[in-house]
Image (cartoon, rainbow, N blue to C red):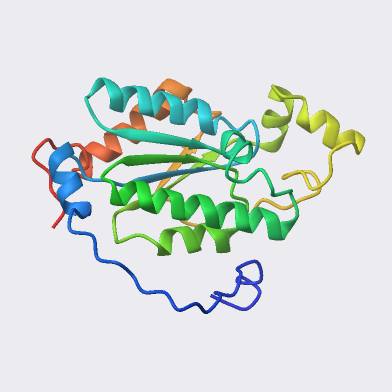
Length: 216
């Protein structure tokens, strides 16, 4: 990763800390739940359909008896990340925090759905780097800006266009399109229900939902 790509990442603070070994580990949690814990990282513009599709995926998982949790960007910003704004630096910290929360949830054996704009490639790469191979699936909810702006369910694009809302992704703040997402959903070509089916089918093909699954 180049210096430009890492410009948003904070330097670690040196502390006299030691990692504590926990006897009931990820493998034990996964075996108890009968599933492979993974992260489904939904990224895309505001109003792209990220949370709509993620909600449908979680409903399918729940119906299949799978253990999951959905982390939504707006919800997390009202609690854990309530102190953060929308500067590039705060956006990077927003993703750093939720990535580590997602890591804890995967360690607890959960299928974790993350629905955040997450506009920068560097932060998405940082998030992926926290996980083992085949534990992190980047899902690009690809909706053209014009379509997202036409939807505008929260009126945010209108505020951004009028200058009332600054640093809004797609208007005056960049969204870096994923170059090689694990799953690419083009919302102008499929419905939210079809997209959810596509994601769940991917999990099935990867063996994430096998009832006898245990992490090696």
